[in-house]
Length: 303
Image 1 (cartoon, rainbow, N blue to C red):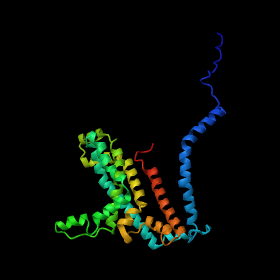
Image 2 (cartoon, helix red, strand yellow; image 1 turned 180 degrees about the horizontal axis):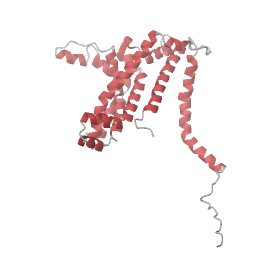
Image 3 (cartoon, helix red, strand yellow; image 1 turned 45 degrees about the horizontal axis):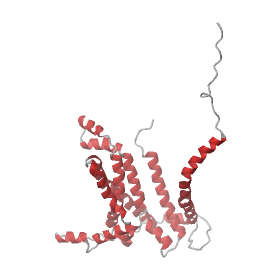
Image 4 (cartoon, rainbow, N blue to C red; image 1 turned 30 degrees about the horizontal axis):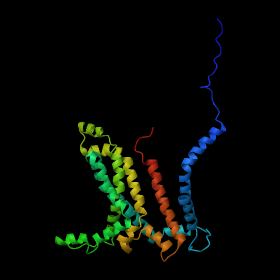
């Protein structure tokens, strides 16, 4: 019996070494696609953040002073009781606005995604987006007209025999204005999540004896958790940095971190170092929230 001839590997199975030309092509393609956006982020996000961090290390720096980083004095000042109260008020407004937008936006998004006629869904969503076409400043002035002592709201309640309420220049006015400003974002994100909801699971749970409340908490919420988390995070971050609504609707009693930072840079105080330290604290808080969402935001069990 003659020995079988040796098997010669075909060209398709042989390992082909990448040529320098191919390596350059694999590098140039992503660079062309990502280069403009990366340059944009570098110039308008990374570098300004580094400049703010450098200024935060200089105590009592004003426009025109020499930048000479010397310590953490500005950061230690952030933790003084008066400024902790301002940060706490900012968190209160941000968390309160997020909860209000979630409670108001979820039923609306649920109805649009699952109950509204298909031909009307886009028109209804357009109605929620329309307020975003106007300036936030204009919307705040509209709320001033509604909530002031002689405004529309007090005119209605006094017409039925109730006493007028002082809402403007108080914290409820800030929550109303901020919730109105950021509610469309919550509705749009929740709608995108609820539109993908598998209705067959709700029908199966009902056939197995689950109540609507049980079906909501055990099926609807887990399947739309990503949308809830994304919408809540977007509203929280936007509310934390909102300046217009607290400034126009809250008055002097509603000082927030954004207003305090503005005063340090453009107000009478002119303490850029302390304003930069406050800015870095806000940036750190937002970055931490995003990191927690990325790490713990997926409710599906990991393998």
